[in-house]
Image (cartoon, rainbow over all chains, first blue to last red):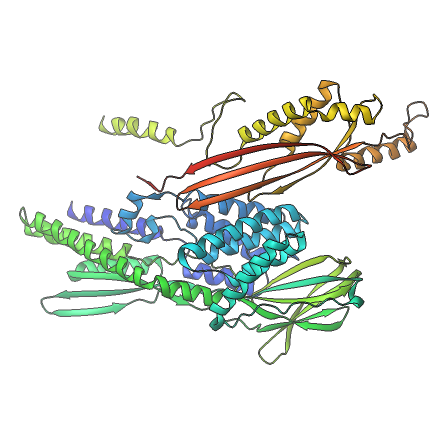
Length: 432
Length: 197
């Protein structure tokens, strides 16, 4: 009978362990597909893993699915996916008290994932790109206004801003002839770039029009490069009994089975506390720059306009103390629950008390997982080049360069129509 | 017996989780998120129809046209708001009311025209001479209906005040004179629930 209950408890642990979202291995596989520029394989893999995101994190599923497409492989489905992700986030406005309480007993995964401020900003950015791909400037501007309103509120409430998104908005307002809005956004961008000086991102130089350029149009090529870091869970287990104590650390790459084994061992060991904390895992990328060619002639090198890796790390550092406190409170709560239950059972029978201790320690160790959720298909950086191009159809090429300026790969847009006095946007996603 | 009892308890709970659809009266006001919705669109249409049909512009237009019905074309209604709003809903309603009033004639808009011209081209090739429609007989519009929808949003935490303003104008295509300017303003206070159980 006792064995039966222990087995049931272990099954329960397995079930709970399974509810932790996409694994590190899965993320590496998707990143691998994207690095080999096999977006279709990445998309198929994400679709297959929909269940691991669950309904709770459906917004992340839609974002991961949408963000790995580029303007060459653009699909109209992208906009639907992004809108769906945005709607799911809006629905999360009201915070659930019960889910919050559960996060102090089980782990952070009991609450649905709320996008970080920079992820929300880039959700708007991707939607704007999608509307521009559909040549729907009116809706691109609606989205730009929403993004600027979001950034304004962010600045008012937290002092944070996103220099590139402000700059991007200013360019779009300029395109539409909304000069006041363009000026305000540009000023905000300039201030934000100063505040983010250590990110090495810079506002692109203003393109100067002269009398000779009257038959030209402005071409902007955005290069979404690399992969943003993601988080892994690092679990530290402190166990002790009357013979001594032991500290063990796992590196976040364990499978569900290994986690269950660790949990079972922790329970068997006696008194144990497990604390899981997230750790930043960087994804190396080879492409370090890019060069723009129009009709075979080099016209510009792209410059770093947004450093998302920097934003990710900065946000993580800012949130770390909060994560640390939450984890400590959770560990203490779990320990108190285990000991109270054990003491209660000891009054009836010491053996039952010990078994309760083993089961609860195993359960709580197994469920202790750091919240490693993030929009992991975002690029590490955004680079941009702005050039004036004669009206007409052109062949636009972007050469991808390594650290030594050696060409690793290239992207080609054939028959790109440039109109006089108009602004044309192209973008490409690389992860190599 | 015990299992049956549990099953009976669980079944209604599972059924309660399914999608529910309830038919509503068109006029019924139901605000869900606080964003622009069908009620706003209907209110705009109603105000614009009233203002347009009872406005002094009609007498002026009749005078300009020497008694002939003014011909109107629908131009662009710009969405300068922060929401993706389909302006066609109230524009179509306004157009329908004006046509049905018998006071105004409408010609097909820029988008609609393309398809009709294509059809005429095909008729030229495939239809019999008796039924084929000739080119160059389109009626040129006298006035263009255009407008702008803008909003102002003030938000603090879970509370926000949203103000929408819709302006529609009838512009004389020949002289650029604005003959009529209709306006509808809508103000909403939205208080979102910050917590739930």
